Length: 282
Image (cartoon, rainbow, N blue to C red; front, side, top):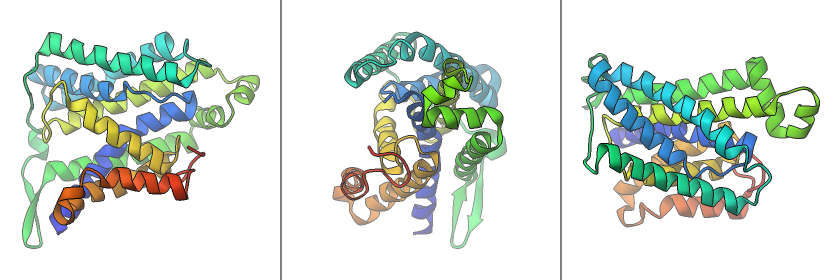
């Protein structure tokens, strides 16, 4: 049981690192980004390619920087022109971007499944009571907690973070007060994209890299954001931890319902607490 709980913690913290960017983007842009899974996938492929030359850490850096630039471009070229448009238009455009990204991956990397090893520094196992557990998986937990702590510090202790919170609450008032919401939005989308790209690299040693890898993680990320409360990072962190345990323990106790449990939880939250665990009304 200890192993299952730890694996649930691993998946939950990893899922938060992925979903946090989605929550940030929605909080500021009010855009449901169906291309977020594609950013995760592109990060994995960029990291995989760079890791061949520069190792795991080089791949992680390339993915973070490359996806940050891509995120800024995405905000300027796509999200900014979509401001004020019908939500359905945004959904269709971002869904189209996801399909284009998948075709791009298939064109340049093919349909084969890829993976790369964890860094030597994080290889091996640690001894636990009656069992062992991979060090790399514990490192994923540390990564997710570091992302959560870093974002919390940035949003509450930095001047830019306070601007982000103000613009998320009321962009019109923030603009009147002199906040450049366009530049702020580009920064937030860039940070969210970088986190998604890093999550793709971090997941690569334990999950396969393929053109289809974006779908499952995108669904779980949306569930996390909805359960946590749209735009709430604290709620998303709690929801990710809950969903991680549900996904892992569900396989043990309710294997026939494992795929349905996250959706059932989301339905229950929408019915009895429409604001999510901590956020605005869905």
